[in-house]
Image (cartoon, rainbow, N blue to C red; front, side, top):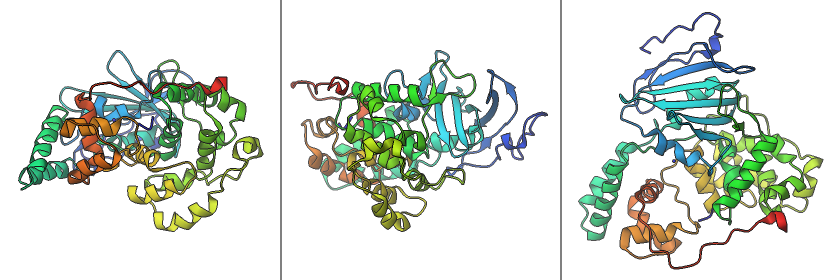
Length: 404
């Protein structure tokens, strides 16, 4: 609420379509990749044939810490951790729906398995999801510079953050490269407590998503397409517990989903064009500001990549402000410098961790300024530390819009 093969490749086994192969190479971090693509009987029905990839990052990656920001509360139909230690995630890729299973080994190798039409895309983007593009070295250099600062406050803060980073050395800021999948739940989390938003997310995915391809754990679903989000009737938004303001924001954003996906630079030709308005969503869209011209005005400036440009496009859409934009860019673009300004709890947590006193948004940004370029990373490390100010006030009450 506003408030992580050897060079030359391995041949595809007989009976496996050539498209199953993932080209070997190196990630943007320079880590060597070991890739295998082969047919593995698993599950039944469409998409039951598994594709696999093995990737060895340059440094150990904590899969749990890195993937956890993509989980939307307990029982998230698009995210699951099973007793065997595997992480399961569904996604609607440019090539279609897919299910991804990720495990890590003691020697640091990451094993990915995927099912469905989007399996190849999910495996190709697995290193990005797990932070292959994350500038960890740049963060270490920043901490080293701050440690030599003449300002004692910066020296103390850098020492504290460096200690936190040492405790969570496998944390990476990964990027899912799927903007709308990060946007819809972020909008549902606006100005409500987490359990209220997550209840709405579960209801909408189970009702309008499609079952996860392959042998995914029971109850997993793929996020609905933007076209489906646009035609969710008003009564089901109400049953989900999402009032008209948040519903309208998601419906309007769905009209521009293709432009939003292009901001990652990895949308692919299979992303559909922006849909035309549907009369089925008229009860939600009626009276809402039309963002079409606003988006068109900034589209040329946005180009195909860059979190800062994505921020401009996102905030041009009605109902999306600085908090929602940051929550989206942290996950979809892997932006380590997108702190969630406007969060109900975050300023107090950051202020208390760095100074021993709670603060507001302006104070939080001032404290984080020395870490510019990695402000979200610092916030994430503080959250993981468990440092919290004493609880003295009432909790934010949950509201059930279904009873309104």
